[in-house]
Amino acid sequence: MKIITREYLNELIEYIGTPDIKVITGIRRSGKSKLLESFVEYILKNYSDVNIIQIDFYKLEFEELQEYHKLYNYIVSRYEENKRNFVIIDEVQLCKNFEKTINSLYTDGKYDIYISGSNAFLLSSNLATLFTGRTIELKIFPFSYKEYMNYYELNNAIDSFDDYVISGGLAGSYLYPTEKSKLNYIANVYETIIARDLIKRKRIKNVVLLKKISSFLIDNVSNLTSINNITNILNDKTMPTNDKTVGSYIKNLCQAYLFYRVPRYDIRGKKYLSSSEKYYLSDHAIKYAVLGKKDMNYGRIYENIVAIELLRRGYELYVGVLYKKEIDFVAMKRDEKIYIQVVDNISDETTFKREVESLLKIKDAYPKIIIARTKHLEYMYEGIRIIDIGEWLIGKTNN
Image (tube, rainbow, N blue to C red; front, side, top):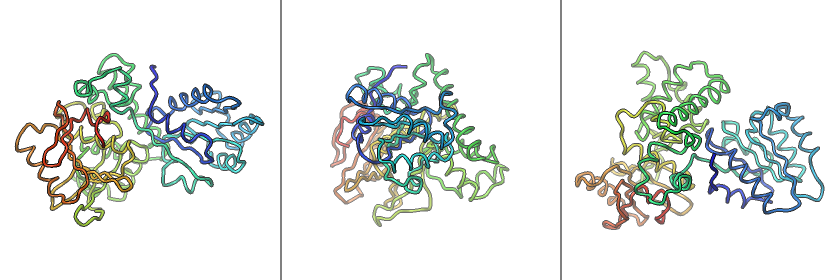
């Protein structure tokens, strides 16, 4: 497979030598293993007197280390004095009680530790209780549009965007020659997540219900919904369930990094709302791979792409509410705030007026943006920036 230098590599490099436990998380096949390989290559090329203790639990040669005492003893036995010792473990969750090994190594104070995983064992909310030492989490997403362009050596962000809409960012699919074979690969990744990360590891009892809920969320990306609404719909379709079960299954789907939940935010009252939320796929092409391309709604797909890109850029994300009107995204990062509307086509005057009016009702001075498939260069309208989605995705704008 062709390897490109991902932006995450620079972040990893910045953490070299820090005492923290570096934790790399993300959906299956998002590139965590390839990132670690690139990181090892960088270390060997740029540092002398290093000792790299690298373990990949997907490889048979390390299977016997899936017991935490053996894992610890293996690493300690390979420690070298007077060298910088890196410990790099891929898919660490396959070792039961791995945290005991990591905590002991951290306490030793002799190792620069990097671990990766792709399920709920390494959730952000669990890291503080799982490890005794301070952690730094690096969240890996599938290929961004910018990385997609780098991979295929493309240089026109506007013209190339339509292909990315279909291909998505699960780069393993890029090796396949036809659209059908690419989508088959993505569907297989999805099925593996459902079967291994959820049904098997979470011991899901009602497999049919889990798949129904997942299919519903896929079919309704970018739509407001609620646990109660989903429960009622399933009950109407003779799939008896309750809010507690539905909520638990959705939580599991999000913990597998398949979906990201985005809650609502009252812009005027500056408060968070719990009545409903939106869910976005970690990679939009999963929708085509699982449900096909019938009834394509490009506006909703574009919104999904923008949501994941904002999360990739480190923003906290909310669906804005103002005077009963919806603002697609309120993106926050420290003192920064951006209001964003995402739309397929704004060439229609009625659509353009609707999107603009929603933003103009917001009276504060934070930036306001409409991201659309304009197919031309950025321009301003009454203080609102109008940007082609392809241009925005590759970072040719300030936000």
